[in-house]
Length: 292
Length: 326
Image (cartoon, rainbow over all chains, first blue to last red; front, side, top):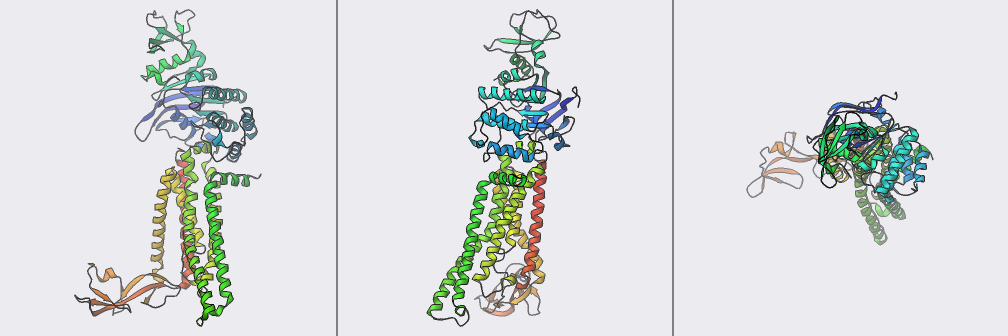
């Protein structure tokens, strides 16, 4: 696969659950190779559904997805060979030790790099002999990440692994992830509803809301091409308002998208959280759900 | 550590408590059966004449009481060997997939393993080997104990304690395992799966038993009421009319209304308003499958149970292939 081809792709992907709720409403998305992409959105935005469709857990109602060019619903084994997956909750076996988890991974996954996985856990001071049930939430998440990294898969899908972690554990987790991705040249997709945490770690940003892709760009472009306009600010030429949302003190703030970067536009730069808030507001999603 | 031993160790760890429970239970049952067998044989060996037709005297009375106590205990233990395959199969079969889904570990295991079949097959193989091993031990112990507490019968050609001794115990365990596995995979929740699996086990085994009886009916012979049937198996009863025809009660009285009197010799009469026998209707005949058919009957049922177990195992694979891991 060439550098330019997307490693993860969704084409007109729609997913409706049995109870009639549409989780995804026909999205097109292509994640290029390399780096970490943050998949951000509020609860019920469809983040988990999208990831689970790539893993082959969910069947698309319409459209399709590919992993390294493979449709996971038609060739699950082929797709999984390219994937490492970290679920929302660590989901470790209570009855097994950390070392047992690695041994199981060796049994299940041809080519599982036990030494690397064990080395990473050792660096974090997680004893291999410890039973999984005795580990903290952060340690369990690290074990789940080590299992995914040990597969040496070129694509990592992480489904809100930070949700239940304290700030320190979140930072450690992201540090290990970024280090591994940069060392191995892998592609990671990290879903989260905590924008501030992923800001430092991610190269790309996908904002998902009400089952639609609201924004997909690099983090650098997202920051460079958006401004915040407060009440009383003059409108600027070449800028299109995205949406207005409530600021930290309930003041109305408007996210403005620039058609091209303007060196002196008179408006302050938007931070990533404001970019996300603006796009979620544009989809009429309750803004408070999007941020930590 | 080899791949197989490593997998066996992990498989054991994943179901440690259930396995320890069934291993301990089986060990106790086998030990008690062997003890009863040895004790019963030792009691008979003291004076075999005490257990013949001429047995008598105070010494024989003591031996006879001792033997009766052991035979009574042995008969109770055979309830254990009857229940063991169902309990073992369900206790080990239901959690195999259901717990993984219930606890969320299936999400990790099914993505680490590229093939879900490759994940499930060794797990089933390990548990099936445990079930076969433990139930085979119980089967052997029951086969040693049963003749020891029934020394006057040839149990190799006898339906006595059917399903509580011998190889049928193993096959019943495998089918119960298949039922637990398949229902656990379908439900993905341990407790509901266990409850449904219990009902399904009762239903399936009842259906098999009914089907086997129907199958065997052609081999059954009508036997007069009160005649010793030896090691035979009674499938039901018929009324033999004076013209020789065999009919069921329902055929004889389709509307359900009957006023009859049955004599001690099995003769059936119509009865008057006071219940006094008047005209002969026929005689009750028991449908008996001779004890000599016991081995072939066991073989037939074993084949059916084995086939059903394979079918349910296949169903479990199919469900695991298609279901969500949550």
